[in-house]
Image (cartoon, rainbow, N blue to C red; front, side, top):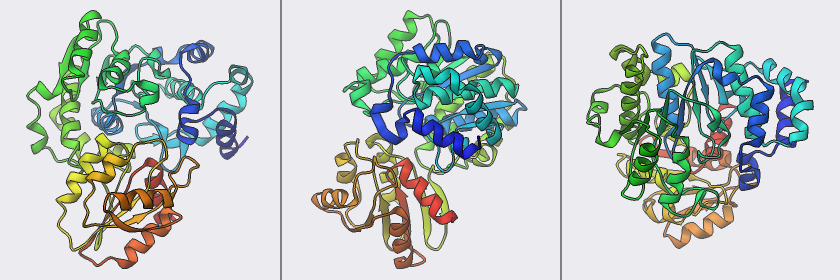
Length: 414
């Protein structure tokens, strides 16, 4: 079995959330526990850090990995979704999982997991945990897939849990209020295990505090930790304005890790922040891919995450702001469309997934909110038109979905 055959098999036989949405979500941990037992509980062979929340999970996970790598640790990193290739999800010291390992794993283990009918994420999580053990990592940073309480990553017993923030997303699965979603995310808080909370609202703070208190888990609220000023003096490779909030969360986490015995110097911290993309392969976070005109892409895709992008877009000095936009069809994008700048030129497209919001539907919705633009059948077509029409002092932004950014990066890489 080749790598390509193995990935095609997984997508065909194990439903993937990023391909089919909520239909791939499996409530409960029975499959995860069965897989974990089969593979000999590999996550117990190394230390772990668990990262959940609505927005910023990937940036925080990658930056912590970069800091730990700079300190000499051998670091596993498990995140989702990927942008260009499945192997991005599972990394050791920034290097994606070996493709022959994936192929051999699927071929060898398919007879075990087929009768379980696991989800794509359940199989992928088992693969990651086993790979990290085989690669003898010192510590693995594990990003929650969806929610927390019933997410299949939640079998680990981490040194530290991190919850970045809460906003309304996946409400059909996690709850339709901030309190309910916070309750699901708080499910990763473990007995007597420190937890760092990045940002809170009046609705969410009591949820986290009550859960931590019940479990005797030391809790740190990063937005009250006095660390909010320090990101101003850090050189950060991630340039999105929202990264300053993520940085406060990361710095609070580093302080806890130091107390737990991790050897992390100020130089390690500076190195991690300054070279996170180089060290871990992170893409799609206010990523600049061109100048004259300036070209930026960002994977922010829900109202909470997109508001920060919109604020930054409105502050960009440029002759004309050109926005290539696309979404998937399971999100309420009306708050995003309402907040987008009315004086920009829009190139309305659809990503190459059957979950895509069709470009003609997006075009009709955009007109209702006073946005002027045209529709395009592909992200590549939309971007190429925007670039051909742009002057050197224009600004082009590409976003709306992980899938849009993936299509864009694929198009410019071809």
